[in-house]
Length: 166
Image (cartoon, rainbow, N blue to C red; front, side, top):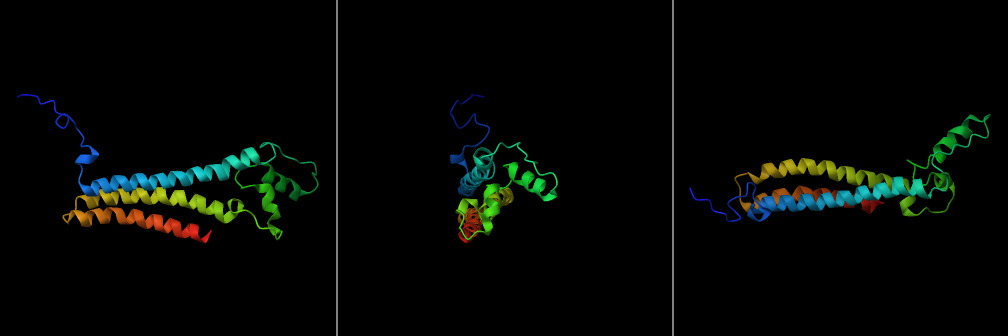
């Protein structure tokens, strides 16, 4: 047998260009929604970990236990001096004042940021498996493509609706 060295003959895996339209759509929406999820994860890292750790104004290991007679004093000190876990924990005690906090300092913002990227990652895994099954359905290419794309669009609309409330 003669060996043909053309680029398409020696490849074990097909390229994206060789895949059917529903498979191309699946790959595209997975990349798009994972990018959105990664931006959410990056936002959570910045807002929840980096800003409180480096910009809290206190060393992260500092515990002020000067008043040993008051049991509530050490508890409050432990919560605020860690500098992590609570977004701007020093300012969170001032929430009772009528001053409005910036959006990025509110509990709703932090919760929405956490929920967003976790929700997108989890739903994407389910939709990837569903999309792989859908590619092999015996229906038109157009219908398979829409069935692959629609769940990913739905989760992005779901996430956008949550952010509208913030």
